Length: 316
Image 1 (cartoon, rainbow, N blue to C red):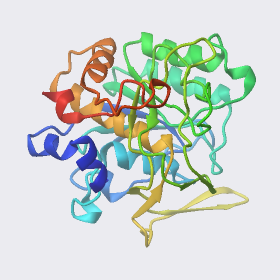
Image 2 (image 1 turned 45 degrees about the vertical axis):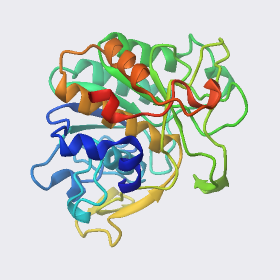
Image 3 (image 1 turned 180 degrees about the vertical axis):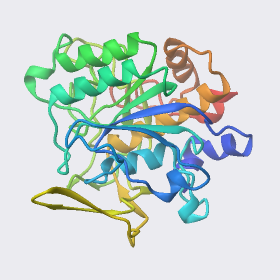
Image 4 (image 1 turned 180 degrees about the horizontal axis):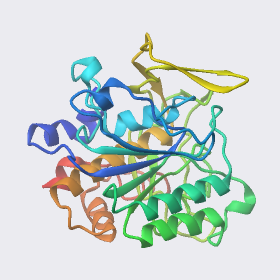
């Protein structure tokens, strides 16, 4: 996150006292590990809901959700500040809807979104990060269940931030629910380099607009290639009786991942900084501020949307 901080100017935010303290960010993903970057100085994993295995103790048997959380708000404890997330004082609400392979059912995502709506006041959930999606043909409808789910979450007053997906560079390659006209859809600004995404070497992967309904997407872009963030900090093994948790720290506290899944939490973290400073802002006002502060990269709108996230301009 050190390189990313220079690009999006999150270092300026931290130097000027913006940390996103107390802002609840819900993460729809594979879960969350109790990494030291989340727990040292006070455990900021304030809620965990598991729709896969129905455990009550936070865990992540894949690693994707922990990496996303680190981008949003790891405090850099394990790296002495080198790999600090965007909003290092925000709170995490982890909603596990994906299994150890990163697969999931639409019904669990919808249940997770409803749980977030129902608990938004209890945990001060102001942002929900959705670094997951589908490109199945029957989902590319504005009336699909996933789009209805994120729209209902937006209508409850929560800022919904969704990945554009990794199916670019062709037109109309935005994943669902990123096709929703209400949510903030995030693409990768730096997908011009070849990276590994889910085991495949790829380039120009970020989903491009428009949507099948001619809605301009993505809305904004942020760095998503070769992002260093938190790794699973304790081991999870499986036996016939279910999952077993091992308290020993992982030898690798950080790892590298790429994709719009990584660009999305950069924007979610920036929004947490904004709402920490201006808690009365509505989700519509947040979206407008993102649009007004984005930096034009000189690319076609179907690639860059409004442009590159710039936190200094967002907060000033």
